[in-house]
Amino acid sequence: LLRFNCKKIPSSLYVTRQLGKNEYFARQLRSWAHILAKEEEIPNSMRGNIL
Image 1 (cartoon, helix red, strand yellow):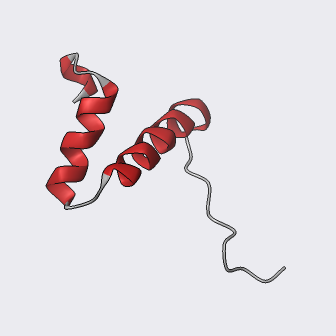
Image 2: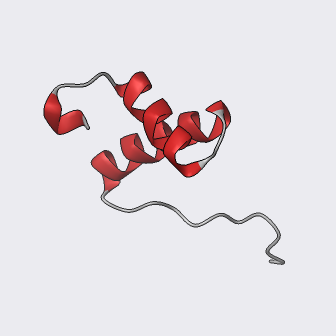
């Protein structure tokens, strides 16, 4: 959607509605997109892992 000059927030909300998710997921999606553009990789979650 960003390739068609759509704004980030409406684009992420559109995608999350299509997936049946909520606004929190839209925020996460924007965060992941920012990280992906910067680092080219989405980091793995350490949640639930025993060190």
